[in-house]
Image (cartoon, rainbow, N blue to C red):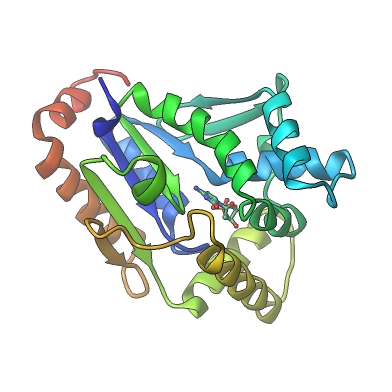
Length: 236
Ligand code: DC
C-alpha cells in the first residue's frame, strides 16, 4: 500500500471539507485524516505555553518536541499531545486564528509534513486540509477541491459553533473567515490553491448528500476494485 491510495480534499474553511472527508472515508471504509487538527494542536501547545511571540525556529523546535500523535478511523481523527487527547480543545475561534497564523510559518509546516506523509504511506486514507493535493500528496490519484460562497461557508461555520455552545454573530464569523481565507491563500508557504488535476466541487447549492454521492461515485471509478474490497469489510 502506498500514498497513491490517498484521496485528498482541499478547500477554504467552511466549504465542507471536514464533513465530506469524514463521510467519504466512512462510505469507502477508509481512514480519515483532519490535517487542520495538527495545526490546531500546535496552536494549542503554543497558547498553553504563552509562546505566541516565538520565532519560527522556536516554533519548529516546539513542534518537534511535542510528540503529536494521531489516531485514525473512518469517522474520527483524534489528536494527542504527549499522550493527552486534545481533540475537544481544538475548535475555538482563538485556536482557529492562531492555527492560521502558525500555518504561514514554513518551519512549522515542515515539522508537520512528516507526520502527514507517514500516515499516507498506510494507504486507504482520505486526507483533508489546504495543501494535501498540492504539497503533501501531489501523487494522489484522486483530488477534490471544494468551494462554496463565503456567505454559505460562514453560515455553516456559525451553525457548527452554535452546536458547540459558542454563539458568535454571523458578521463576526464571516469577517473571521475572510481574514483566514486571506491568510491561507496569500501566505508564501504552501498556500491554499486548487491542484491542476483536482476535481472541483462547488457545494454552495448542493446538499451534503449530493456532494457525497458525486465524490463517492468518482472514488469508485478511480479506485474500483480497492474500494469494492473495502466495502466487503477490508480495513485500512
Ligand atoms: O481546516 P482547519 O480550519 O481546521 O485548519 C486550521 C488552520 O490550519 C487553517 O487556518 C489553515 C491551516 N491548515 C493548513 O495550512 N494546511 C492544512 N493542510 C490544514 C490546515
